[in-house]
Structure formats: C-alpha cells, structure tokens
Image (cartoon, rainbow, N blue to C red; front, side, top):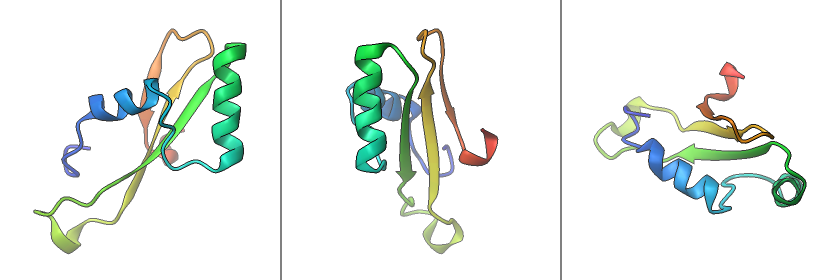
Length: 81
C-alpha cells in the first residue's frame, strides 16, 4: 500500500461506512445482510496507480475483512487469503 501511496485508514473508513468498494451487487447485498445478522463483512478495493510510479506498477486489489464477532479487521492481498 505504501508503493501505491494509499493510507490504510482511508480504506478502513470506506469499509466501516458501508462503501464496499469493487464488489458485485450480490456480495454488496450480502454485506448489508451481514450488518443485520452479525456475520463477516468483506470489502474489495482496487488501488489507484500513483502518479509518481507511472508504468512500473500494475493495478492491485486489496481486501478488507471484518470477522463476524468484530474482534479483528484485516487488510490483505487476495493471494494472502
């Protein structure tokens, strides 16, 4: 995230306010239901390419996952899941 110049707190802010990012409508609806039912909440965000890096970086996606018991929220790359 540092290479993409993304502040993780910006992603957390989006996540906790119900901006689920780049999810299909079905997954977004599952998150809305999870808020009522107390289950896991999942967001996905595509990191914008920083101007300073130009062509050297590929677009990257990160996931933000809050466990059902809300004991932990994790930011990770899809391949880290």
